[in-house]
Length: 470
Image 1 (cartoon, rainbow, N blue to C red):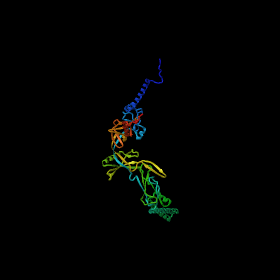
Image 2: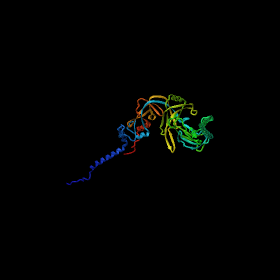
Image 3: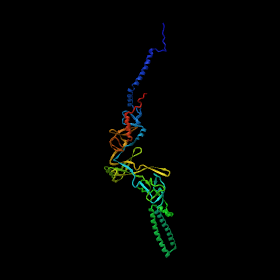
Image 4: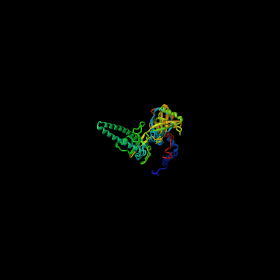
């Protein structure tokens, strides 16, 4: 009987079929998953997001692509946000403790920084006819009391003649003194005694005349030192140095008043007459803020002055953030109405601050923080409240009818609703109703940017993986 031997290396059809069927099934499943991606992918992501940790950590559910450096910690977390350190710096975020205290309701009035009449500007003139021979400072330079400004050569005939007469009288007194000394040395005698008495009478007359001529020189513009120099050197003064004049400094907070050369009014070699201005100097150590009040507001200004209530002024700074000056006092209220604006003017003292001093060769220059012409808004107090929580205006964000502040909680910033009783351009008064307590930490700068980032976070943003297949 013949046997058929099968080839063991060649599979039969019934062994091949199951293996190919399994491979085909896997391929079909992969294709089905790919084709239905849009159906199951989004529910899966939502399930993963709902299962992500919400303790502020950076777990698997944290979305590191949230706008503004914020991180999304779950779809249900709508009142808190995490901001990176870079994001905090970008928005200028600051956190401070809440304090309760008195608050003054104010009325804003326009103001402008102005110079003090008779104090800020000093005009340096020449007291006699002369020719300018040397100019020491340059425009804008800082100078101090007693520092030389100009050298001038005297051409005033009256001053020259007054010096000649003064010097001549001094010489005559010297001659008389020598004659008196000679007569006193002769000894007692009728003739010598009579002559001695006559010479002493003549000496008294000459001394009175010398004093009168000395006063004449002082009236012509010479100083005590210059007059004394004429007596000592027995020569006439041909050139005079004009210096920075002394200034009453009891009203200034400066040990050494500093002036700026605002204008040089002459050139070297120029002829000037008595009274002509040589230079204009300014001292900005203290200025005024000139406020303008309408007729319905003048009573509030008068009350603030009578009660000595401090004012605040808001100045725009270089970085766009308002600069607030506090504890200012009203000095006086002008007696009349400004004919152009029909407003009442009042003046507030503004102590200035020197920012720094630089040198270029032998010349020095100074910079002041406040300068005439700067526009301000004066906050005049009209009502005083006790025990209120006062925050900067940038500490509060609005969303429809709601008003929020942000308080830190670990790395997260929690949004907390508050009731605002009053607000102005710089301050917000928050009701002391338990939403905040003295000592609580609050974001005082950057609340509006946080509110915007929180709304963007609630909107979900754009899927960074949309349109990509992995």
